Image 1 (cartoon, rainbow, N blue to C red):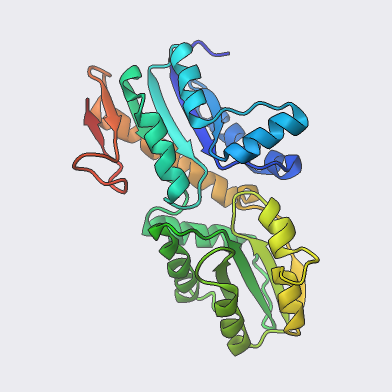
Image 2 (image 1 turned 30 degrees about the vertical axis):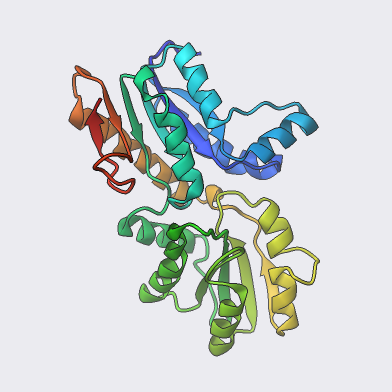
Length: 292
């Protein structure tokens, strides 16, 4: 264990599927560890159900955000960067910030890295990173990406990103969600209008976990694969989470770097206590740092 007083807490939703975790969450954390050798790296997950399942099934203990914060305080961490692997600024990200900022007085400085989709630059970078993985999409094919979806207002990013794919020239790429809008019915209408012969389904989630295995590619008649096959398309499923894409992992590193830069701009000599906060006069989107 490093003696550094500086730490990066990598926060993920989590997964109970070890194989996809190794290829995604573990890889993101390893990339960050290699890029920031002077920082101690901690892990926390926001899904208490998955944390409980791993402990019960595999005797593997993963911290919640609050538990990780308490451990870092016990370890003497004074400077903290929190980097989520969340795709959007949704409910999980809001709760994560509340958990960290509830103990902000224990740290000299705290900064939050952005989730994957935060700025317009992020949106375009994500699109380019995804299309690097699908460079040879044929004229009779379409790529259909499955996002999670949420009741949070941040869900609007999915429709905006679907539009941006097409605005950037990727007219045969469609982005829908399991639990919100754009829905399967919306996708069916758009894809019928395009008229492809073959569909490639891929998860637009960091891990190719439960939703990818069951809701996207499962044998059940309600799965996306089954529904599209019923529509008459040839369907191929690509079981890779976004965390397996090198371009996506580079974006998370960029977000860590931006958070570190914001800390340095405010307190280059670490002369006063500071915290980046979503409360008070600043919104969560502002991602600024304010003195305590």
